[in-house]
Amino acid sequence: MKLWAGRFSKEADKKTNDFNSSISFDSRMFKEDIDGSIAHATMLSEQGIISVEDKESIVSELAKIKEEIIDGNLPIDPDAEDIHTFIEGELTRRIGQAGKRLHTARSRNDQVALDIRLYLKKECTALISQVKELEKVIAMQSEKYADVVMPGYTHLQRAQPITFGHHLLAYGEMFLRDIGRLEDAYKRMDYCPLGSGALAGTTYPLNRERTAELLGFTGPTQNSLDGVSDRDFCIELASAISILMMHLSRFSEEIIMWCSWEFKFIELDDAFSTGSSIMPQKKNPDIAELVRGKAGRVYGDLMTLLAFMKGLPLAYNKDMQEDKDAIFDAVDTVKLCLTAFIPMIETMTVLPNNMKKAALGGFINATDCADFLVSKGLPFRDAYKATGELVALCIEKGITLDVLPLEDYKEICDLFDEGVYDAISLERCVSMRTPLGSPCPDNVRKQSANLLEKIK
Ligand code: ARG
Image (tube, protein in one colour):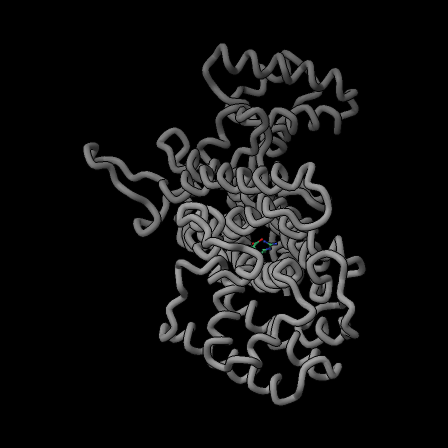
């Protein structure tokens, strides 16, 4: 029998019932639903709205129900309309009259808004610690490879020399911003909607500050219509997660490239790669590819949330039941991705010789060669042109700048001397890049320590 059976003369059609039901995806909020009800009943009794005896029997039975669900001794009825209905029904079945008093001054509209906030607050906290775990691994790896020279790219063309540690720390910065966004989303979801009722508050003398306090919120929400119809916190979290997934996806793309024979900058641990059913030589970076792909799925979740909220009149509308599937999927997906991604980065083998080999080709020291001429007093534009001619000459001869004879240098610009070979050596090119945020090994070591400090 439905909660709202009184007004209706027949039971809902079975298929309609299934269509309407949210139990298949909201039952995961059973703890939050029970915690919310315990706080609500406590406040109701403190305010003299229900008796202390009723409150006690509600609270102790709800605690039992929670334990039983956790232990698997109370299966959640898949035919229930939603988790709120199921728990209230079970409570009433067990304690009778007192159970029927629990829903005084409450609606499922403020109840569900509360449950999602409580659930997502926990998930948000867990996600922040997971991203911090990733940061620890990045800090560890960047410190380890602070000195390893590799080509830095623009347009996927070798551009200038950097260090592998520096490259990794770029992701460290992105994930720091992700942590900031998640913390920020948390702050705004940390308000308790309970007491908003169905939409118009209630006539009972509630103490909304008290319920908020009992549930660990910063405070109550300020407008009953907004309290039940706001899903910004889902959208904000989904967008923070989408940006995080975008970073994971870019990182994955690089991992995939670095694993290819064309690069061979790294090798993934066997535990984080897969083989091919037909090609015996293959070792595929499936984890990274899946993470890259799942970013699209999470963007879809964000779009779902934005799209169904668009144009909804105040206050609650059933469209909003779609929030849970979308935001839970986004949260589950990013957590799953991180669970596989973190140890993949932690266990990868870095191949410094291959990075160095790639760095030696592609004239990535050309800017430094031009800078050498600048140090001899030539204006940069002229130095740039002279170096361009040198590169063309090298290409013609099939060699690189470091082995081009000094006579050739001098022929193009007589300001060159023996010193140029040291000036364009890759080690020097990176070690001279010392200003804040640049790739020299000392900076990398300092910044990986800073990163650890920031996530404390
Ligand atoms: N299952 C519903 C949801 O997730 C709970 C709220 C139901 N409220 C209502 N007025 N039908 O949104």
